[in-house]
Amino acid sequence: MPFHVLTGAFVHESNTFKKGETTLQDFRDNVLDLGQVAVDRFRGVNEELAGFLDVAEAEGWRMTHTVSAHATPGARVSREAYEHIAGLICDGARAHRDTLDGVLLALHGSMVPVFCEDGEGELLGRLRDILGPDLPIAVTLDLHAMATPAMVERAQIFVSYKTYPHVDMRVTGRHAARLLDGAMKGRVRPRTLRLGLPMLDEANAGRTDVPETAALYSRAAAHEAEPGILAVSINAAFAEADIRDAGPTVLVTHDAGAEARAAEIARDLAQTIWDQRDSVSNDFLTPEVAAGIARAFDPASGPLVIADYADNPGAGAYGDSTALLAALLDAGATGGALAPMIDPEAAAILHRHRVGDTVTLAVGGKNDPAFGGGPLTLTGEVRHLSDGTYTGDGPILGGITHSFGPTAVFRVQGIDILVVTLSGQMLDLQQVRTFGIEPRDLRFLVVKSMQHFRAAFEPVAGRVIVCDSGALATPQAHLRPYVRIRRPVWPLDREGLSPFG
Image (cartoon, rainbow, N blue to C red):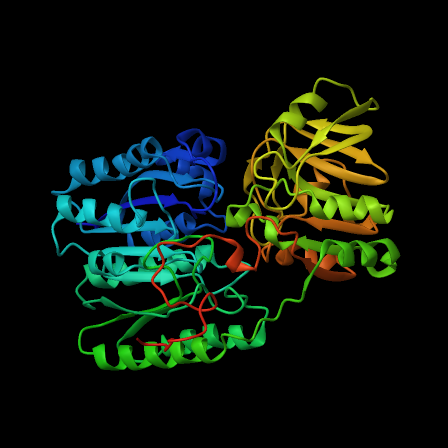
C-alpha cells in the first residue's frame, strides 16, 4: 500500500506594528487555491509544493493536498482568515485520519493571528489533537521564521530555506518530503532541537550574499551530511513582529541517538550568530543622499537600483512611503522609475483617465505618515493602464502569475511611478517590464524591497544602494514600540545580555 500523505500550505509573515488585519480577501488576492487547482498551479515551479510533488511521485505516495494559501506580508491575520484556512487543513486531517501515514506542510514561521502569537504552533496543536502525538509531521519554514517552542514540540521535522533572496523553495520542499518518507518507512525517528538567541534578528537578516552570513548556511548544509543529522535550519527571524518568542533560532532535526551532536551543532552556530551581531553589511543612506546619487548617476553600465529598504511590503510595510520620492523630485533627478507605490485610491483615480491625460492627485503616505512621510500632491501624465497581471520569469517568481490589481504608470518630472492597488514587493523584472518600464532605459530605479530584489534586479544594475526612508520596516528598530518581546534583547538593549541566558 502506498503511503498516504496530507499536504497544505498556509504562509504569512505578520508585521504586528501594522494597522488593520490581513483578511481572507487578502489571501484570495494573492493565493487561495484548493486541492488540485493548487497542484496544477505550482507543479514544476520554484515552490515548496512542487518539491513535495517531486518526492511523492518518485516514491509513489497517495497525496491529498488541502489548500495553498499565501498573502503578502502585512498586519496580523484576521480570525476569519485563520479559521477558514486552518479549518481546511484540519478538515482534511479529520476526513483522512484513519488512512494517513504523514503530514507535510509549507508554513512561514512568523504568522501572528489576532487572537494568539503563534499561528503555526496553533495549527500544529490542532492537528495533534486530531491525529494524536505520533504521526510524523514535516514542516518547511521561511528563513525568517520565528520558530517557537510550541512548534518544535508539535512536529518532528523542520527544514528552512537556506538562501536570501529565497531561491530554494522547491529544494526545501524536497528535503522535508524525503525526511518524511524516511520517517514513514521507519528508517529514521526524527526529533527537532531548538536553540534561540536574545536578538531581534541576525545581523544581516540572513542575507546569503554576505560572506559571514552565507558561511553559517554553508556550515548548516555541511552538518546535514553527518550521521544522524537530518536537517540544520538557521532562522534569521523577523524584527517587525513583537511576540514573546521572537528572535533567531537554530533548529536541528536529528535521528534518535544524535541528540548530543545536535545540541553541539546548534550551540556552535548560535554562538557565531551572537558573535557577529554587530557585523551589519548594509550602508543605510538617507533619502536626500540617495537622491543626490541618483541625479548624478551615469547609467552606462546599467541603472542605479535604489532599495527603499524601510518601505518593503515583504516585511509588512505599507509600500506607500513618500520620503524617497519627495527627495528625488526635490533634487531634480530624472530618467528614473519607482515601483511600486501601493495606493489603491490613486490607482482608481488614474484608471478614470486615459493614457496621455495630465492628472493632479495625492499620491502615497495615506496609511501612517509618521512612518515614511505623508501624501504628495503631484501633477503628471498617465503613461500606462493595466489590470496589473504579470508572470514572473526570474529566479524567485519564474512561471508564477500574480497581480498588482488595477495598475497605472504615472510620470511626474521625469520619474515613472508604478501605482498599484494590491500589495507586493519587487521580486522580478516582469513586475516593471509588463507595464512598459524597461530598467535598461533608466538612470535609476527605486524598488520597494529589502533584499529579494537582488535576485532579479542586481544582475542588470550598474550599482545598488540601500535607503532608509523611515517607513515601517526601518532598520532603526528603536522607533517601533516593542512591548511583548522578552527583554533584554539585542539591539534594543545593551546591558544584561548573554547568548544562552
